[in-house]
Amino acid sequence: MSLNIENREIENVHVIDDNSEARLSYQDFLIALDLNPVLENGPFAQPTDVVHNIKNGSSGVLCDYMLNQTDYADFKGAETVKCMYQKRIPAILVTKYGKAEIEEIREYRQWIPSLLIPDHLDEESLIEGFQSCIREFNDIISDNRKPWRTQVRVDFLEKERSVLYLIVPGWNSNQIIKLRFAAVPDAILEKILKNEKRFYVKTNLGADTEDELYFTDWEI
Image 1 (cartoon, rainbow, N blue to C red):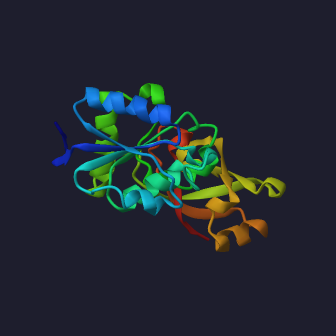
Image 2: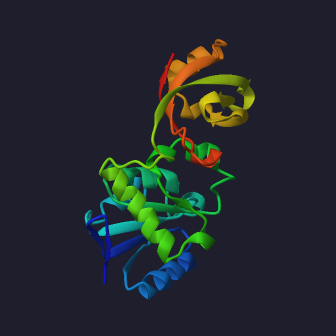
Image 3: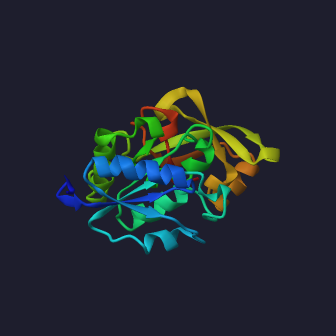
């Protein structure tokens, strides 16, 4: 059996997780949905190694975040899902680390339409997650994901931790967003370190929560 989602037949679901027991658990879940689970056993040196195993058009992906805690992979799941998105393969990031690692995940969030905690993964959320990806591949962007050009203000820097604190008045002027320096283009970061405060970015102003926000196309 396969799932017909936005006129795409999803038959195979690849499971990317460094925990073999978790892979088997997802296998049981997918078999119960009459889908064909494909367990990716690794090891992988880079995300493209995983992409090469996946047939685009009839496949989806469930991907863990902490892939690099063993010799399974040399990278994390957010980077993997980004690669899948760029290859137009629908992928869901399934992790308990969504909040704990949000600063790092945010660097990839524009390519992650669906992020779930494991307990929230069921048939409905699986379909919705794949649907969100496929719709974006077809340039149908939901309100909470659509990017808008807006001004942001740097509120505070922690140079020793390489993080900055940002205010996005167009989203919520009473909430601070923490960003890693690595998430900011070098030319912009240079200006920030010289104490410039205001910049323009594209961000999804319709985001329901801070965890959904992403930032692209920085301008002075």
